[in-house]
Image (cartoon, rainbow, N blue to C red):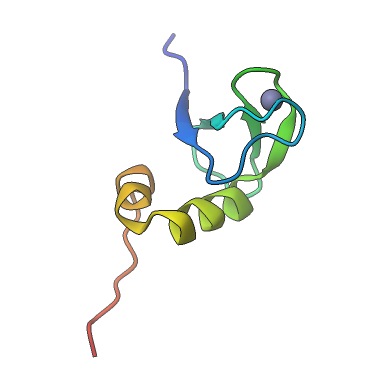
Length: 74
Ligand SMILES: [Zn+2]
């Protein structure tokens, strides 16, 4: 069995240990919990955390979030 999780980099650190590394499920339910990779504290829900990641570094987040928003340049 493969490990169905991947690491992401948090724009703001873990509230518990300050680590910027978090682990999220590859399966991709928006209400999955994201865990700190160091101390396993729950950082937040996937959708919320991904939104923060996207705002902090759009290009990097695009690689992490596979479903690209179909945004047309206006
Ligand atoms: Zn932590």
